Image 1 (cartoon, rainbow, N blue to C red):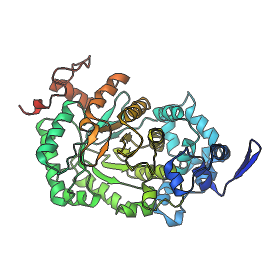
Image 2 (image 1 turned 135 degrees about the vertical axis):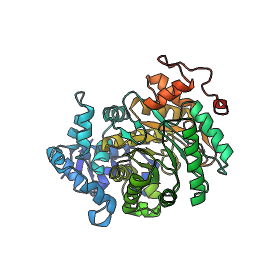
Image 3 (image 1 turned 90 degrees about the vertical axis):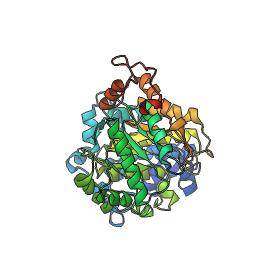
Image 4 (image 1 turned 45 degrees about the vertical axis):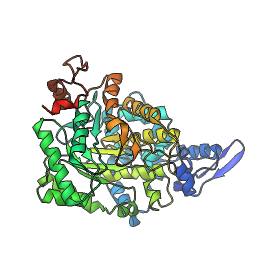
Length: 456
């Protein structure tokens, strides 16, 4: 394995595979903060040259966190299909890139390939791609999952209806729920981040969502994004829940900072199989985000793209219905501006789809980052073109509880019309039956966006 190269008359040598991966990454403020980024554009290109000539087995055999030290590494490595891996292990990383981008590649090819890759390999090939490459590669990887309905079907584009409220006021939450559904949002999931994540609060909100969904016969999934243990306790005590949520990290240390272990996630999945209210089999929902491991000093000296890819390798173990990266939420320390946020969103979506999970994106930013709403709409449009399964839907794109900005209720139908997409089929039928859109033509009716339809 060669760890050095000459570029324009200058020699570049790298310490190990982890160092190559870090320095081959596109510029990220988080990698600069960690002290592992390339010091110049020339060094970045040199690292990419070295990475492109590495074998797939070189990258797999050098995980950024040792197998014996980290349960995430063990899950990723143990879940590899060795027969498929043996077919590709002697490819260079450049050859893997060319395979993915080959025009002959089908969704079945991509699905099979995903079973032979580790997360470091997924991250490595990502670093060799332009933004357009990432979009094209992700679009080839069709991944569906079923809870009550099926997300990710070709020709569909879904949203999570996120009716967060700064005091968890039931009337305020329901007002946002009504408006969101009236705008055709919520086919992926109706899911709230609670201010009060106590058992009583989680139980109350789940029952409120369950009753509203059933009263109006809305074909979707419900979830409250409290800690996994609180949701489990609520389900054990009889609360209706279709999905169990948890934020996850790409290392065992990072997950410990979230108060989570792999066994805890397995217990949650098993509980939902026996006591959840959905048809399944995909009953888990995970959120991630570049930089989260560095923020808890759990990155082990690895770059944030690799650590993010490892989140997806962990998530895959639990066959999730939804996974989304909350790209841009942590702030400029990790993704400095709209250029970095856009790149990260496309990277994360590509890596999730190549890993073989149902991938969405919370295209977002905070007020102290160099981005604005147009930047986020640009990213959302790129993601839908790349085959993203879902994005967020929040009143006016402004989450008044979490204090960040992302995609609003209006964007969902605009993006569907722009790209000729529909909602998830059952939800699309519900929109027609409710009189929000016309059958066949998909033209918006006068009822579209009118939350008062739920007051009659």
